[in-house]
Length: 546
Image (cartoon, rainbow, N blue to C red; front, side, top):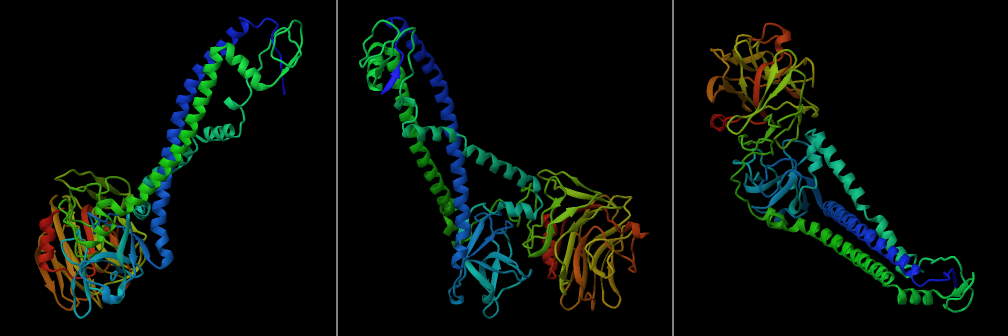
């Protein structure tokens, strides 16, 4: 039983008061419902996106439990079906089951303790395999043994590894924006939390339409066991059901309020069911994306797709500009990032670079490639990549532009120090203070070839130097052979590829002072290879342009 104060003369005043409250409830209820809908939509969408991301992460990680090998694709050498940032899962197979056309995950022959993902293109000598990236016009230079195959590409999870690509390229701004977006999604997922709590409360009969109505007070009351009005100040003790029936019988506004409350409760319950349905649908859709994007996961691994819009190995801010990155370089800097100090390595080795003070970017557009200019006193491109063994056969190349007042400097070379002046250094291209270009190695003495003309003319020139396994050294300028030298292998060394600066002491045709070892001019498409590229290949690089 519940006690209510009933007014002495309830006829008109009571109905008017209840009607006013019913109108206020209806108005405020409409505004609250609109806000509730917005909060529910935000909550559903946020939870759906988060659920999809979690599902994709599970698809990428769980196969490792059964011995499969997930790996993040770092370059675009397998575009257009496999993109940088995709996670590809390799399924172990017997060597006898490996056949031409499969996408193989294998130990990188040019970089220890790293994996490479390329297609089985042709048979090599004996049981060796020749591989090739779908986006690369030529096959990889180093065949692999079947024992080096870790697995066959089986499952592709699109773009879930993109943060690792950004981290490797020191693109911290992208990571910051992504982290902020995830935080907003987490907050958005809680936008309808109070509504869900309210719904649970109504389900237990707490408040709302399922509870008792508001007390109706008056100046006098009577006590009794029925809902009849009596004179005098008294208290009537009645059941809530009788009061609801009495109020509903005399007050249409109250009936409307009750109907609105019941309707709102039904809507909240339907929305809760819809929220669960949309969340599950989003999660399933996100997982299905793993299977159906670009014709299905299997399609990415079943056959090579034509790549008419891009033939280079890494995505760029200037996709229309870059020539093909081919022939398996150990690093390749295109300087196409557009801004910042990070330089993306377009090869498969991920040796990202950093522009030092004294290096400025020059923007480009389709028809004119972006590049970098080094001031000749402090500018260079550094890297945090680990030391490597100096190759026996190799190629170094770059596009250079020397202004008429250039003081020369080192273009590219190999030294035993990652920064500063190396104590052991060779396999290098450099320019004298007058614009003479020289290429050389060291092994008990300097072995060099130099140009007879100078190149401080403000024009772009392609320069390259090669040394074969037999020790034949060749210098090229603009695709033409300048000169060759036999018996010129480099000395054994462990160190780093250096761009724009390092020691040149003791070599011929060097700048006027050690302060001018810093390159003074512009660079584009700087690269090194662990093979001696042929004259035809270098001529093709020149034809491809910057």
